[in-house]
Image (cartoon, rainbow over all chains, first blue to last red; front, side, top):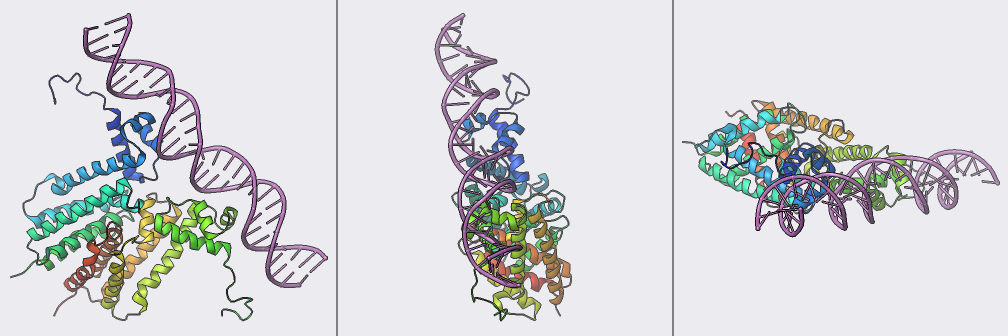
Length: 198
Length: 198
DNA sequence: GTGTATACGTACCGGTCAGTAACATTGTCA
DNA sequence: TGACAATGTTACTGACCGGTACGTATACAC
């Protein structure tokens, strides 16, 4: 449907794409260190040399996974539940509502970018660098939204929301029925206590 | 000083203790998966068979590390900065004050128990089991303290504090000067908005 | 058909991993 | 002195790890 001259409706995906998809699932569910390149290529239905033709190393594959994850993160964050929001408060609350619902479900694995910074404490790891850069951006975006809510101190409310969200990511994988179930209430509390009243 | 018949003031620590100490440092700083047993025994100044005489496997050594970590956690939590607190609000704020100061410093590595749940998503991992049990206890303790503060909904304030604290743990290792620097302000906001006024 | 380029697979490498077998050494206490 | 417990020494295993040298299949050009 994309192009008229396309030879076949569903051409088999290229090896590199299959590898990215496979790595995305495995790295997210089991952790990067826990997954070997053999497992990645086996699930992708390709062979190891195909991996190393497209990626210089496992670390670089992990970095590619981080970039893919970040792209899909921003989609989910900017349109929580598939909807756009003009009101900053509603926007953030909608994201947290969706997030906390996922986080109390079985098998939740949190944020792939956050998890990578835990797996790789060393600052020069390529995957970690992508994750760190993303978190700086996310912090900035939340500060922006906090400003849009009319917060007295947008930096503080932004940080508060970031701490809350990261708390959801990580406690969500510690247990089902964890504190994430209170997240929406807490977010409202935080926002309402931070915006100027009267 | 423990016993009068002690032969020497500083008797060389037993191999098992040296291994626990070595594993504690290495596992915490670099992550459990990232550290091999050879590195653990080398740092401990002992040999591999000594490790496997005291611990059935690396996983069991990791579980022992979790138990040690938990013990030292409770010490730090119940007496933040070495001081006891009778007031619940002051107690929690003191812990968060110390914690956030550490979390914005370079090389911060968060909570070893939290990190282990990220490293080991599988529920049957021995180390993870210790960590999960601890987090349940910690949640209960925070709820108790929230009650002591006079919160309208102690469960909600307890969860709010837990989400905040876990947020500090994890963002503290993503960057220096992260959102953890706002943690004390956020905690006060949260507590004050949760206790009945008038 | 014969180049030629692209895309892929077969088979292998050296290193590291967790874990163990067999034996030697030391210190302690009786 | 003798026995026991704790530890060290050495060497090894099999599995797995990330990574690669090299051969092969397909498709399109002329």
